[in-house]
Length: 561
Image (cartoon, rainbow, N blue to C red; front, side, top):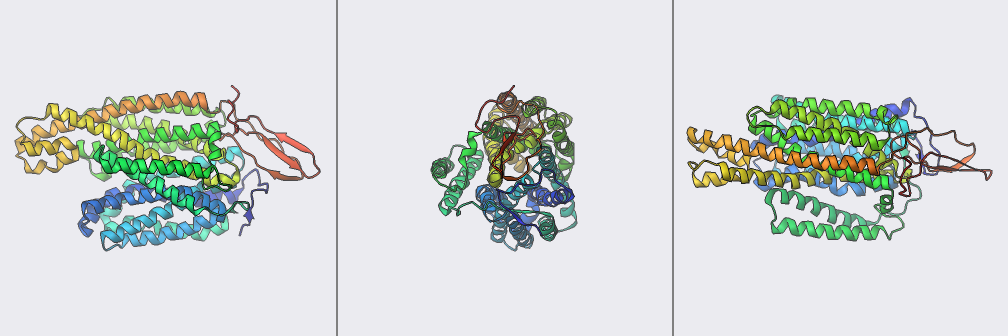
């Protein structure tokens, strides 16, 4: 239905009804991928009973999806720039639907692991494609900011709906039903995408460098694996070696990209101060949230004794705050510079983390929910405007690569937060348990209880009722203290990020793009990501030149104050 758009063609400045309907189509995979990341954890007890996986197999069932997404994001983002973003989106949608059915009807742990790996690879095609297509469809900076706000809102809604909808499906059907959610969604996407979505590819892109693809996978997968294993096993030889090897290969990958004419990853984007700052702030703020979120979900289920569905319901207020803030951020971004919006929102998150330091093990649920609402309320504008800054800093032909970097930073952020803050929280738990564990608890059970709260809960049934009470209270208190400590660390980190945001991000007031000269042959408009145009140079066919713009940040210069 739509024609291919080379990067030398001037797109329409204002999107019409077709583009907004296309945004609704792009919201479908975004919503689904967010839900798919959460529903599995509810299904684990059910699929464990049906398939009886071993301990390592169960870990691979849970982790392989995220590994594949993280490993293939950079490759798929650049591949979409080359072969067509809509084409890659539809290929990924078809693969995701097939893999969802394979996962739902898996008859062995090995089959489920393979299906989850395919889901991850397919998911890696969907996220950067949707975000890159948004930048093509909504070229007006204000409309693009609104569209990205909708995109983030759908992701937030998926996070909120995943546990609730997954719990309802598991109550009514078998464990595989949670995977079948993807089939009708992807069928609808395949039907509507050719009608409502434009095609876009970079007609001047070179061939895909397969060596770079191999290097990116060989770097990203070991780094993610090493970080995750360090969170579980501490400074063991295997994760340290794996992480070190991944970092070495990562350096080789970056060095190769800087020498290629058509790199898999355009490292020159990092020369843009707004791009680099937004990417770093996004990674670290997501890391803070990821580590604390892990402890919050465990607190609800292991300390408060809530079922997964009830825990999901208690998380709805925070998810509602995330959705509301995502929806309101684009309007705020049109009035206030990015630096101040992101700085103020991160300050709100920091206050939320401080509230979480006051949670106790006896009656801490209301305080926990209130603090987490503030965390989510503050993190949302950062995510919306940070994403807009990242993709807006790239020229149109590199939007897929920029979108992939944004998504990859999120994956790394979650893994880093779980590893670092998870390790700190666990160390605090063990230290507190060593000091408070009653001497009446047998040595073997005491050693197990010191490892983690789940271990303490698992061996509780084998103890007399008198000892259960003696063990349970200090275990709950030690775990809650670990949550308090990592929340305090997150508060300090996010407060520092708020200061960096005001210092490094654009502080100019958003402006409007002026009218364009007639006879334009080539244009590459870019923005500061919040609706403020950077220099927009155009070339008229008669040889005259016109320029319109308000700020210049592409070279890394400090924006006007």
